[in-house]
Image 1 (spheres, rainbow, N blue to C red):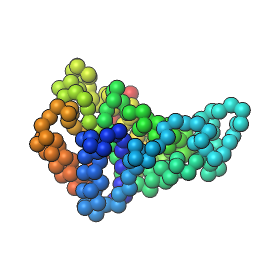
Image 2 (cartoon, one colour; image 1 turned 135 degrees about the vertical axis):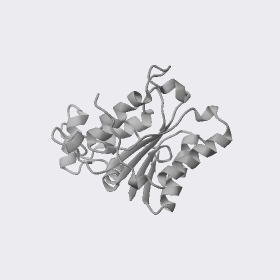
Image 3 (tube, rainbow, N blue to C red; image 1 turned 30 degrees about the vertical axis):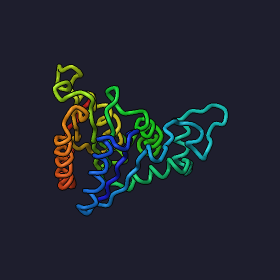
Image 4 (tube, one colour; image 1 turned 90 degrees about the vertical axis):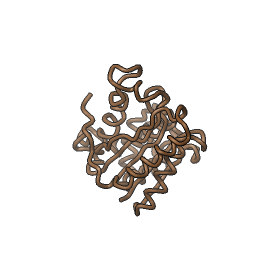
Length: 222
C-alpha cells in the first residue's frame, strides 16, 4: 500500500513525533511504501500568496481561488506545493499527524490544506464528496489532545470529539472524495505516565499492522 504521512509539531521530543516515527517505521516494516512530509523540518510556508503559483491569472487583484483554478489548468503551482500535491495523488492512504489545538488543526496543518488541497486540483463543483477526485482512497487522523477522554464525550466539558473532528473528516477528507478511517486519538499524553505512553504507541503499531484491511467509517453530514 502507498501511504503518505503529513506531520507537524514544533518539538522533536513531542509525543506526536513519537507517533509519527512509530507509524513511519512500522508501516515500512509491514511492507508498505511510505512517504512523509515533516512540515516543521521542511520549514513549510503555510501562507497562500503569489509565491504559491508560477502562473498569474489576474496581476491586479489576488484571488487565491481563481489563481488556484487557473494554476490547476496550466501546471502553475509553485514547486513546493506541486511536490506535496504529487504525494497526495500518489498515495492510497493519507495520514495527518498533529496535536489538536483550539478544537482544530494547528496553523501549519491548516495552511498546508489551504495551499495543497487546491480548488481545480482536488475538488470542483462536480467533483466533491462521493464524486470527489480522491474517490477510492482513504484518509485518517492521528492526533493528541490536551484534555482527558472524559472531556470529549457528548455533553462533556469540551463536547463530542466526533463533532470536533467533523469539519476535518467531512469538510476536507470526504469533500475531496476520501473514505475516512477511524481516527487514532491519544488523550492527554502529557498527563499520563511514560509506561502508558509506550502502551499507546504499541497499540498504534498493532493497528497499523492491519490498516490496509480497514473500512471507512460513517462520519455523518453537518
